[in-house]
Length: 99
Image (cartoon, rainbow, N blue to C red):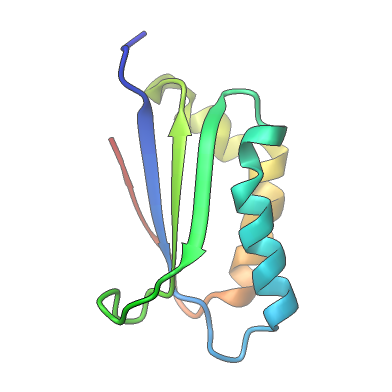
């Protein structure tokens, strides 16, 4: 296993009319991923404070213990549950990069 963590970054385009309570719920759940998925070392999600992201309003950074765990993360039931909620609040597909 590499000594460097594996990073998963996602940009989300939240719809302007998305229910605020649901958006807050999604952000909270994304921030708590490490409490529910053992191989997630940390996660941080928040709303942008600038307009530089254009249509992308929220960002997520997830640190996994290794890149070999990316598929397990994608398939994990906690991730799948929050992904379904993300689909309800976003106006277009998210952008993800992994390294």
